[in-house]
Length: 214
Image (cartoon, rainbow, N blue to C red; front, side):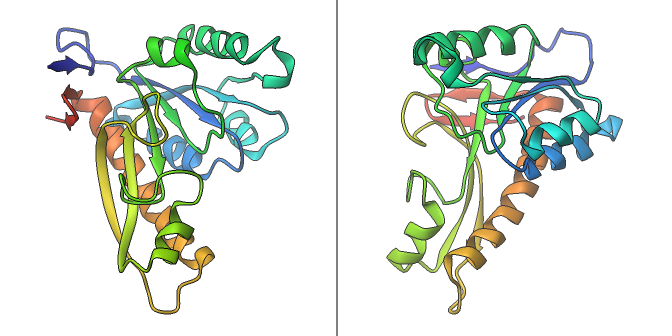
């Protein structure tokens, strides 16, 4: 089965609209904001959302003149209501693509249904190996010689969505978790900027688990 997830070809050319979700420092967000300064990149960050106030990711957006919103789980009656609220506020921004850039909350059914095939996330390992919160540490503990970063379409599993792109990172003999994770993050950031730009400019399709960017 093929899902045409990219923007329709007959739509007038305009920058793809990105909504970026953050929970912390926002270094991946900053890389996207910087890339979007070049008109040829083909995308524009139209809003940045967070699950908590007072974080550097929101400050980065505000310095760039990008609208922001905060939706705390604690302020909602329950998790399902929070999910619906986040879904509505993101949908109001009319995104072509939603990017999790260190967003530490799992999307719920309403969000995943609304943005199926358009919600992307990164993971610091070569999925399907080492899913979960500690990808770099788990890879190091297992003793692999090569790990890396993955960009994938988010589904209702834990790091189980269709893989869009991957980049390899060699594990050095003297690596600890911090040094390995820092090298992975550098590769991850470059991959995110490159691939999101390609998706914005050229669209993408999903056939079973195969994601293709023309």
